[in-house]
Image (cartoon, rainbow over all chains, first blue to last red):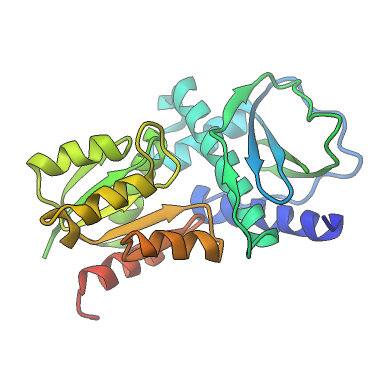
Length: 148
Length: 128
């Protein structure tokens, strides 16, 4: 798969999903290389079948995740439980992955597995060639890796 | 006129969001029912009449495809318009769901006005 096309699709998908479904505006892309990932994060992963198959790994700082969950559910941040935050982060991963694949595999079929919460230090399988997009949010950071 | 809508999605967060977006769009709901998969949705429809169904595709136990298939086989329920809400925007998937009886399709991410427009179109609500 063309890496530039995939990266553009990833960038467009993250920005569009955050803006339309979570009412969040990003504060710009993190400077490369973005390797100093903070420890206080929640992560979700999902695999997909298609041409090609692969996986998506989403990491979000907890404060940003709680805020996004509150905005998504329409409740105060203080009322958001960790279960609700996990649900919303899984949904966010699902939407970003579906949006990316629809952009790059528009003519073919794909299937997404259910997203699952994974340890923040989880790594994408070494066998996958992966593309990263990392953005600053008003109260944290969101990092997405997609590997095919 | 206010409408009765059934939201079918395995994610409680997504069901809450869809309900919220319908409210934000100004579409009038008189009652909103929820189900976490196609089987639960059929249980709801055995006791409650709804004007429209909004359904996800990927769900455990009974997914959106099988749910639409069952709806189309039921003489009474097949008249209820079903709109699919999914992240999958491929032409293949949209055509596949239409062939199973879906009357509308909304791709995530979407704006409140998009969902409202699709609800109004499938329900035949006259334009203001």
